Length: 196
Image (cartoon, rainbow, N blue to C red; front, side):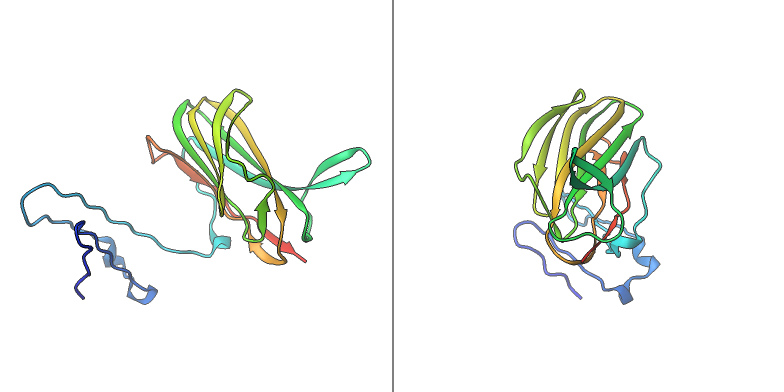
């Protein structure tokens, strides 16, 4: 099959379905056959059931994602660990604990949201807390945290979402990566939610 090349850029892609994928496809050779400058890249991407993804470890960045429900009591709002099923309208507080053993720069932290939840606050803004300055951007499927300078230490990011839909779904992963040194990255597992 001859790939269809995009005019002006030379861009083309080839997609394979599961039955076509063999270990031999992992051996890639790129060869330039004409004069001049050229750029190229190869992306190997696959999809997996979110519930099967396990936390990735082995870098200086450590992540832990936990969920709480905000319950109003006579003494005021209290955070409780999720126990069993949730109800539509419940407010969830997402808590991300980040530990780093060295100073780092230009960090991107991305927290995916469950398909049945919506953020309470949708405003993107710069924030400063506990000695850390960052930009928080709320998007359709995830909240993004952009950190210019991350000193060694432990940090907690928290934001609220509200349960909108009934069903069983995953909250998604929280991922972090240093943009200067992409090998410094990490992701958590996804937490299952059941809403009745």
